[in-house]
Length: 120
View 1 (cartoon, helix red, strand yellow):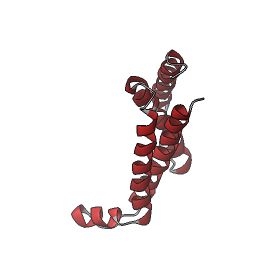
View 2: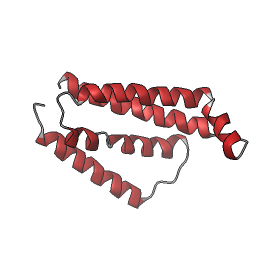
View 3: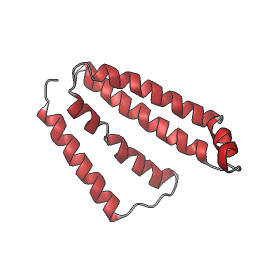
View 4: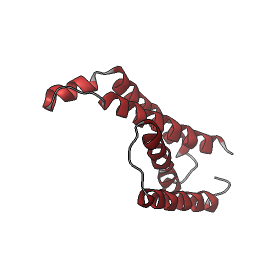
């Protein structure tokens, strides 16, 4: 695996962490409207999630040096699989057969794209 693919995997992993931190930052917001948004934005978990997004973008930029964007962006959709699973396990979010089928199709598509660019 090349450093560029490793960078893409790092971007995906850090992006997942960011998404989960943003979810944690949204829990128990007590105010509605702009006050609630500010309350949520200033939470350490929200700020950490946003920092993760920034770091993920840096890893993604490195990956784009050698991986075509037509492959890198769909590959980043692997985040959907991990976040959906974590949402179901950690946050008790619903997960039905239609979500499973859709995520399975994403996995098949990403796998085909990765195989089509071996050596990138």
